[in-house]
Picture (cartoon, rainbow, N blue to C red):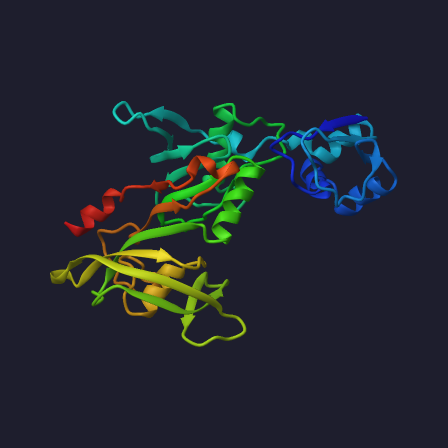
Length: 332
């Protein structure tokens, strides 16, 4: 028999969702059977699984220690991030904390109890594509483990809210726990967060403009296609573009892009569709350039409106990541 006391970071979720995370090797049918037979109860009462958990609630599990360990998968319980080798340092001049992973420097732009924002370098995945990949998720887990903010026993894993393509750099918003991740996701969904990008594009637009259309994702080719007319598969997109600087001799421009909607490859596909592909983005029609290792697209800042509660720490703040050196080198 085991008693599990719900912490303040775990409250607000359904009991069945909690149990599926806690018993990660158990099938859903088994867990619902245990609820029906009262082998799992909430605050000493029979539960269906749909109950919303509150801090201090007690979940009692009437199973043997061996069965609990089996369905917990404790022989393989370590977080993927525990196997990542990182070094956490502080800049002597700016006092900014940063992470060294291989040859990447990942600046910590802001953090509090619930959320953390990184400056993701180009070349790192946001989430694993294959089992053996190391992504920002594993680096986040490792950072929180090394700083003592989570433990191997925690079932509430941290997560990434604003995913960036492997070769897109810039501000990445993450939740340290379920509450932080849910609050960030809700703010993004309700468009209380403004997301700005900078890129160098081929061609020079005459002025700022707003693009709208419909995006269809080809999952096999990992490419997005844009059309002006709606169809059953296309999702509406809207992109606001402003010209920051122009380089007439090279027929290129530095653009600032505000995402009104956020879809996979939206900026890259939308600009290319209008004849202004991102420099180095050969997938979407840009010219190959021997001096570029990747295309030049950077998530430069996130701007929050007035927030309360969990996101009060970022209320009316702008989280900003400076342009990477590749932009200046390319312009020169």
